[in-house]
Length: 444
Ligand SMILES: Cc1cc2nc3c(=O)[nH]c(=O)nc-3n(C[C@H](O)[C@H](O)[C@H](O)COP(=O)(O)OP(=O)(O)OC[C@H]3O[C@@H](n4cnc5c(N)ncnc54)[C@H](O)[C@@H]3O)c2cc1C
Image: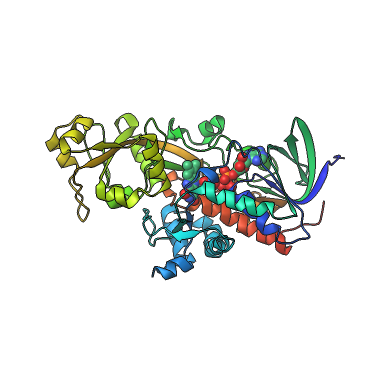
């Protein structure tokens, strides 16, 4: 018999995007007690260092901007990129939830605007929503955690890593201040992100990435995966990741994904243009850069492209870090590339229909990085964790990076906005389910 130290209706493992949204939605039912156990807000969650861009199709901001879009179109874009038809029910559930969820976030007092200046490869409509002022995910997480504090029936327990699942998901083990607590729970939600911060798991599942720069948080160590697999849960698409081909060498900041859509070109160490820059998402571009000489290339753009992108939080960080170099003339640019001005002019020749870059130029050496994993547990569209026979494990849910993501089997299938969609979106669905009683099982 387990001796319990405390009892809650809903225990959430991880207080990042998925965990906070799950708690906020579940706690709308005042009869529920919800506890979020967070490993360390000091070390942080990926949502707080993300760009905070929320993909949603069919929102009021899109309607106001005259942009035609819908959850169905959003889902088709994701599935076209991933090729993962088997995952369609999950993708459709998330895309259907997305506009309602983004409206709700705005209605709680968060200043949202449509990123009409945020084109992305594979996205057939402008549908990334961001905060006005473009401060990124940190601002969004601060806002959501402040909402959490206002709820009497939610406890947010920080510096309290969960270390195990108990019995047949009747509770969890939490380590806090050197002591071990056993918490009994009606439902457990695994919202502890993926395993990009775990070298052993990366080596096992993603050896093809080589040794990329890691741009995520240290807390993503895949803790929840092992516990769930032991109970019969299934791993899926473990070789997929959210990568970035926009990481600035020696700085670790990222240039804006909108640059290629404003004429920016990539030139490798041999002075060659090697890719149609607009044709690749940033995750897919990482794979291309990995196979270039020196695993890097110079991204080159001009004042027009700079004006169109400089207000993003990514470009502000690059500028503050001194990661962007100014080159006033083609001769100065050529010297940086160790080429002649003629060779450099040739490399900058625009592809059909694209802008011609003009001096002065800006340059950043970019390489490939890993931001987050996309493989994880098999769930159903309500976030219930499934066994090999497709049966839900009673009382066990997963979302965000702990669950299988939306990129399909490979990192190339990642569409911008997928990460927060599966984290906030699944938190929304699971929390709603728990609040209405559908997802709740009898107290253990
Ligand atoms: C640099 C960067 C930029 C990104 N930009 C975007 C973007 O603009 N749009 C987008 O859609 N996606 C973006 N992503 C991806 C997105 O941030 C993630 O997909 C998303 O945050 C995953 O949400 P999550 O809730 O699963 O994990 P997180 O937000 O990382 O939260 C997980 C939480 O679980 C905690 N935790 C871990 N283990 C334990 C444990 N054992 N016990 C208790 N707590 C635990 C962690 O400390 C953390 O707080 C970006 C990622 C990075 C790294």
